[in-house]
Image (cartoon, rainbow, N blue to C red; front, side, top):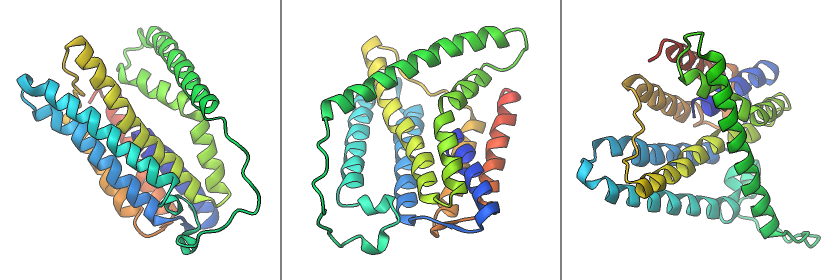
Length: 256
């Protein structure tokens, strides 16, 4: 999330703001993403730290169900009634247009299979890369979190390049969808999988976030909620997010 919101969104807004000044987007999308991310993180990552050990299985099951229902409803709204939230067509949001041509048929099974295959391959490559980087950084004394940051940055390279190109082309809505959508997917899809694995193995799932990491995450969400509330971004807002990202990197190097 730190990479997506502070790194990708921050750098894209900074570069796009320097080139184009203020860049517009649909503020409904940013608000929807922000409240979803905050809710998902609070329910699945923060509250579990205060659940008694005797009740962790019950809450883990609840978390899985809540995240699945929340994300399913979000996807339904995103591609259905509230699809205009995530595009520039806000003034036309209630106007139903009749398509001039019949859309090409979509092979749903093939699309899902390709997506699952891609996720599995990327996950396997990330695992191999993390072990290789661990061996490479073993003698440098660098904190283990550096490996995670490098793997995340390399895995997100297509998103980073796409977001930067969109910002330079004055398409900030695409940047918001990429950065905030990736953050939401990371939280709301990864945690239920980890919770399911915890229930299967019988070992409680713990985020083990340090107080500094918790503060940085919620500071990021507060800043993004303020910056992404008026439908326009600028270089100053981008710089604030990028400074938060640089701070996160520095704290990681310090082992905090």
